[in-house]
Image (cartoon, rainbow, N blue to C red; front, side, top):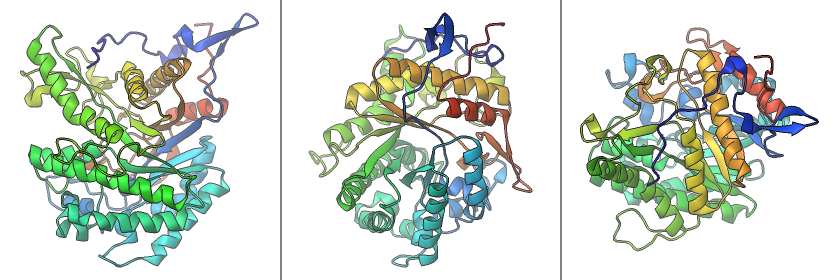
Length: 455
């Protein structure tokens, strides 16, 4: 495992614009901001259940109805009502100078009951895609973002391999319907996180715990990814398909402690390495099956979700904590207590590149906070790390900020505000935040803001 530098040096001061000189080049004696690669995708990312509203046929809707499972007993309800307000939201994307949008298609809306197809939903997604196309916004579509149909769970859910053909039916249908309008496909969002939270820690549906359940779910999610990849490439060889993997950085709290180093290695193996190795080699994590058909090489690109790092020690509950001892409590992610560590994005990019040598899209990166000035700092500090990796020749093709709208953040409910657009909980009125205006400027100019030499 890479030993991480725990120094948070070089953090961006938004009031002075960029204070990292390496992102500028000299032109006629005047420092100019470094451009991002030509054709770079600037976007935001969402998932259906978190923004659409009314997703009453999936496992999360059912999960939310039990008191105490969601912070403040929130329920997704109407969420941001993007299902009916998508034209308004896509106009916002245009105002924000976005040329791409990452969203998920809801399996349970398309198949609300076993074997029952909702044709009105099929048509709705066509209209959805047409609205993006009209605005010249490239869709990046995720097929599985943490939710499954309720009827599938009653059959034993994704941990039963016998149920995987139902996912193949969904992918086959979506591939036939939309391949003319979609080039970029994300198969499974964060398979290790879905497995860990739902089947190891039990804080997401179906609420199961234990290593055995975790491994069963993770293996099947990797199988689902492999089958989706094969289906999409068979339907249209021009489709570009990739899995989305979050990287949780694990480092020893005390680098001199052999036990802390071992804990960091074990956690990294369980949450990162086993999934990446499976996709790279085709070998399912801790499986007696030598390899799974179609899994090896089953990505044309990699989606990277990056948020935070963790310090590992036997003295911490769960053997890790996600912020340093001297972290500023006002700058921790609301409800989740993550501490920003921009350099970790660079380290995660390097890791994926060294493992796969494939193009990389930053499919999620953001901070839950009501301090929008801090969100602006967070945004630019992480974009600086992307430029650093790009200068080393790593093909980073796009950045999708998490997220467009303040939305339903799973077990954290509505308390954690990740959006660059405010969404009033009572009226659902949208309002672009200052961080949104900053991001719009960056996207328009394809570069970070000009350095303020007067400061």
